Length: 378
Image 1 (cartoon, rainbow, N blue to C red):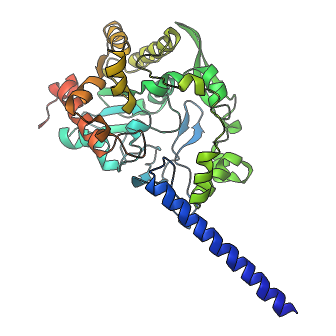
Image 2 (cartoon, rainbow, N blue to C red):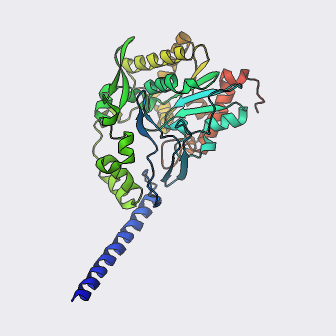
């Protein structure tokens, strides 16, 4: 009797396993063939550490130092590696007797979806022989955080110039506390609160340990539903496909529909950005600061249908007022190719290798730092 029960149980379990494998293979094939923008499972036996976490009391989100992370989608499969200070960069000494450039930004600068040596900062270093220290991260990282990271961490490394890359599509939102309360309610993030120029630096949540992305929860995620989902996503295409069709509605979806930061920013948005840039220029202590704006794939279409965007003109005015050099990438990227889609990952909104290469060439051709540097540029 016992043998029959064991045999029946084994048959049931084997049937369930076979059914799961069939469903999993089907889900993986659907994601791959339709190029759905969702993470693919890696099925690796080692549980990974999440590639960004709310771990810094000054600026919130950052990478855990000396860790690695594999990220896979239908159009890329890359390994992130973070150095001893948590930057996606090679190891850098704090003291240097040669010119160096600090580069600040979000996931575009971090090089989401591309190998580390293909990021434009690495290519700038290769082509100019000038070290470019990449201090950037994914994880909802905006201009207030660019300044705070520079002032508290990046600035401690010897350097002669600073490049800060602004991504208008989400940088204005990520500096807006009211947006943050709805979209990032479970995150520890800094905001300028008040009206220009009378801002107070305010953190939401009040304690970093309250964040669902706090280091304690990252390393012991059993109690955090969001991180449990993250770990499940590493092992099941079925789970990831389920998430695609069962995402809760974005509480700020109406604000994002058809949004372009090149056109749809408010004066309050611009005031907060101006204040962060003022603080950054002040913190740079006379070093040249270069501000670059990054377009989305859709912004090229808006350029045709909505005309010249107002943001570059406003930032050009601020550059004269605050003393930084400004370069907008929208027009030179559009002028470089008849197919701007070829500059972006087919399964994601970030630049591909070709996009990073083009941005490297544009920066080398346009920023005063490279024109004036004593380097053998091509």
